Length: 358
Image 1 (tube, one colour):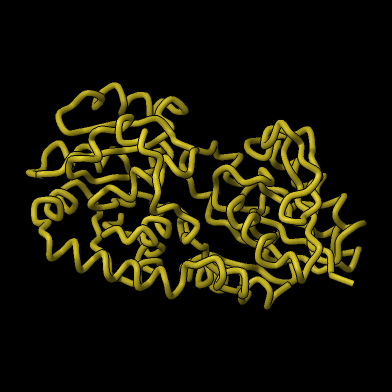
Image 2 (tube, rainbow, N blue to C red):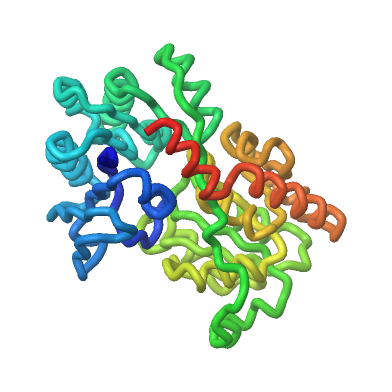
């Protein structure tokens, strides 16, 4: 009999976007012969409400997987899972407040730490306090904690005196050939040289630094930024200020994998501006595209790129880098990034690491 593994904390399958959803997709794909998976899905993820995907049983709940509802979504999923699964793989900590009760059921509980959500300025203070509390509960009441970045492994050890398992994300699911020819007509700027960046429009993703630096730099490249501009005052303000500026192209969020990969594949450089992510899926995907990468200078990004990228902390740093780009720099960065990606950020490798702990 296969052990049953319940995966909790994602929008569910089929995966559309997001690191946890993509992780769930590839775990169920690569490990379906060894485990019986149960995946909890939000009502908003798939209108078709599939009963099965990648041989995993799908259970749909009438709640959102994001925002305040995510707490109740995770709790209800876990309470259901303890009666049907041998192992609970919980992705993220917002619902971890229920873990002391779940421990009574003697099931193996593995928590993917997710990241330091409680540090994000976008949350009100009471939300940040709740997230810090559930982080502590998750670490103390799980059988094993998974962290996707060495920085988080070190943080958990220092903060809670607990050892965690480092397992990153894969990025080799990207599409890099045989693109729809209509995409060339939709995005004619791909025939020019351009730099690309993809992130949510929130202040800790530092899009403002990128825009201001590029506006003031001397560059032969256009700048293409893909973001959910309309989801925040921050994004709306930036789009209003920079839309239509010379050599700056602001695109709304793109969730179609082929379309997104087409734009990244044709770029000359990827700039990763995130400051609070661990091993960010968007970064390892760019590395798998063989793109040269420049990163915002935080320890998580340095761990992900093994200190072999170029890093900026402010407008002046980035402007200096942009003003001194040449073919040799880009070629060196490209070779370093794909070498690291092949060694560390492939789903076959990630799935094997999960198999070892399930």
